[in-house]
Image (cartoon, rainbow, N blue to C red; front, side):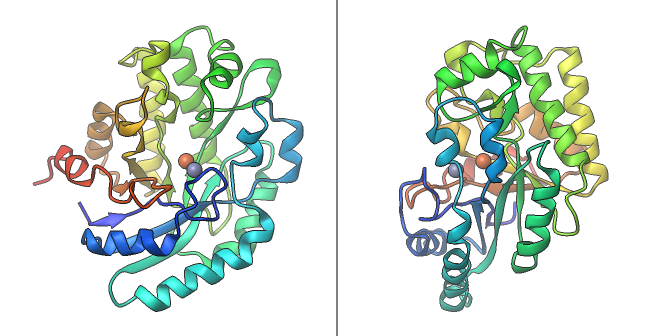
Amino acid sequence: MLKKEGHSHTEFCPHGSGDDVEQMIQKAIKLGFETYSITEHAPLPDDFKGEYAGNETGLTEASMKMSDLPAYFKKCRQMQAKYGDQIQINVGFELDFLPHHVDWTRDFMNEYGPQTSDNILSVHFMQGTDDHFWCVDDTMPDFERGLLANAADGQTLYQQYFNALIEAVSTDLGPFAPQRIGHITLIRKFQDYFHLPRTYDADTQTILGQLLTLISQQGRQLDYNAAGLYKPFCNEVYPDLPTVQLAQRLQIPLVFGSDAHSIAEVGHGFHTLAAMLNEK
Ligand code: ZN
Ligand code: FE
């Protein structure tokens, strides 16, 4: 596996540790990474407020502010200038897919995409209770009330999430659309708390297979994300190992990402994730 840290956050993330991206890059250099992608959560459209339900900070602290974009790019350019001879630094976003804000999202990427070189498309919000959008990975009470209670069972919940991802990858987000799909099993973040199914039933597996087939046909990549391994009620990488193996059979590139929101998390789990790939 390429020694690339493909998913990381910065001091511009309101729910992060506040650690300086410079020190995160210094750690990646120390760990011997060749490439480092800075992928801060892109701003969300203002209009999304009306659709969102749940803990307020799940929305207000989800992403960087629009007004921070100039400072974000400036800092990232400084990092490239200062460390570019030691590590290749990409700048980009972790972009949310919001099905009712496709035009906004495409416009955003058309405007800022030219300044980026590596981006991730993620689904963090899904339609659930009262037809509102709820955060998949913020608080357990919101997950339970907004998403789990709205689904017939765990398999249905998985299917809803994979279908949301199918819609995300099937949507035209323009020439700067992200090439990598983020943590495709994020819906399992609280799996051990809610005793969600360990495996997928035939229907769920079919939908997941459709998702991976699309990603493969599009020549896109998967975020091979270590963060779930360290979440108290997930304890597993994103995606889970059988799905990683299916992706490999479909020849989808898996790009390591710690999803670090702090210095400590940079490179988390890299050796174990690399070993799990069983590459020749
Ligand atoms: Zn984050
Ligand atoms: Fe994410």
